[in-house]
Length: 202
Image (spheres, rainbow, N blue to C red):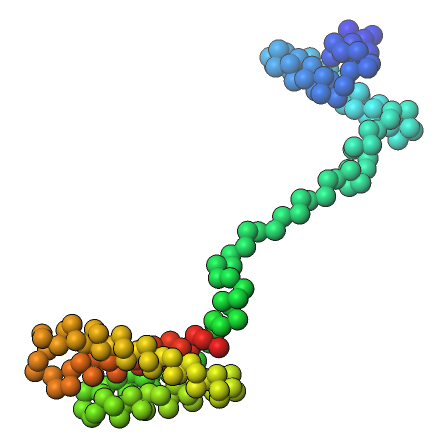
């Protein structure tokens, strides 16, 4: 047995691939697991083959496939992946919609809420005038365009009052004890609308 070459000990040919050599070595080790000397001989043959293959590769006697030597050259470029657009609003609408900071939302909200509370104690018409002034101030402060601020405020005032009078008229029968209930509801709806316009429109 000592006269056998490492290849013969493993039962493979000299042209065997690395996978075939490794498979033969694993199989033989498992078969002779009880015989320590035989296992050592198998391992020694396996190591001898590996060392011989390494030496031959270094001497250029074994051609290393290009895919192994130059793996970085053959690497496929990553696919041009662009995540699906999360843009929900069309471009034309984005010209009118603003994404304000938190303070630019809360500050107008506080003022309009204060005007809404005042509507229960003084004439809703007076607080509506206050709300118009607040809207003009906050929109102008943000955009520096008084004409645009005036148009947005006027549109918010008209829509808010009309919508608020409708809602107030529907609920007035249930809240007869509150004076000027319909007008107060109209003022409250208008304040909400003016707050949305001054905070989220540009």
